[in-house]
Amino acid sequence: MARRSILPAALLAAVLAAPLAAQPMSDGEACLEGSRDADLDAALCSRALAGPDLAPPTAAALLTGRARALIRLSALAPARRDLDRAIALNPVSAQAHLLRGILQRRSAAMDGALADLDRALALNPHFVAAWAQRGALRQQSGRADRALADYDHALALRAGQSTALFMKATLRFQQGDFQAAADLFRGVLAQSPVQYPVAALWLAAAVRRQGGDGGGAIEPYRWWWADGVWPTPLVALLAGETNLPPAVTASEQTAAGERALGAFFIAQWLFAEGQPAAARRWLEEAVAAGAPDQPEVIVAGAQLRVPSE
Image 1 (cartoon, rainbow, N blue to C red):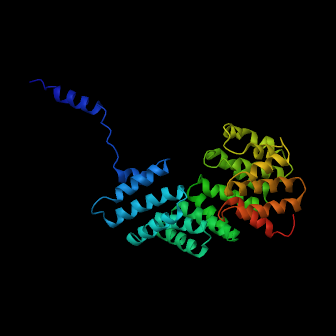
Image 2 (tube, rainbow, N blue to C red):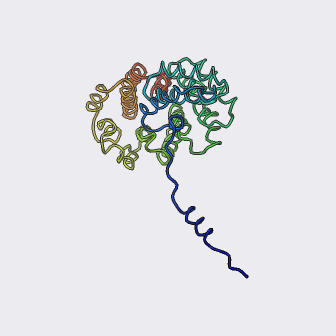
Image 3 (tube, one colour):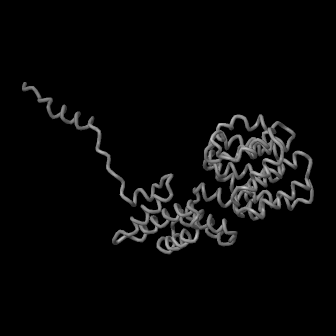
């Protein structure tokens, strides 16, 4: 019986073992995937959108990708124009409705934001991010029970959804359930310490509001501040390592959003120190300084509506 040649099999094995040459992404593919460089993402999306004969769904996806980058760059007006165009081209884009809802929430256009988030969920009932964002909108609107239901729905779909977990923790803090808030903030820090490092400040505040050791609570997360990511005096204040004046100075020297954050946590320190009148003045500063969708501003506003603590 003639021997069968093994050469074809050997050649095939060599071909299969050889590494495939990496194929560069197209501008459109890179736009849709996104990166950490929002400027680059916006440029790639723009270049892809300049291509000829784009199908409407493709153009809508590229516009949505560029809007996502523009939001990260705080270029909110052009981002809104892109999202309006994307939805006109593809009305069934849940992602475009989600992003436009987030934009409208940031500008306190609550009815429009709710309509967009409702539409995103109608298009995709399993859209975890949309459940979380609608919960944040409802929390901002003072509808705590419905916000909690949305957060729980998001977490039922994906237990580690960091936005829902973080916002649910702020809601429990807002409701004065500081133990539940602390447990949830620890969960956030276990899963997303880089995405939500501010959860360590919330955790320290929740522990201090219960009469506990803020410094001990914050210690496992001090690595994040080693390079000065957050104002050191504010961290030191909540850790019980300094007094109020350095934290006040640091807060007053920051941009509006960070000033709101500083004012909020100074207020929580004052509440823990038994100085509610001074704390409420800092809550007013937080509300005046920050964006309406900022968690610290939402909770500060709710605390101001409480007659006394």
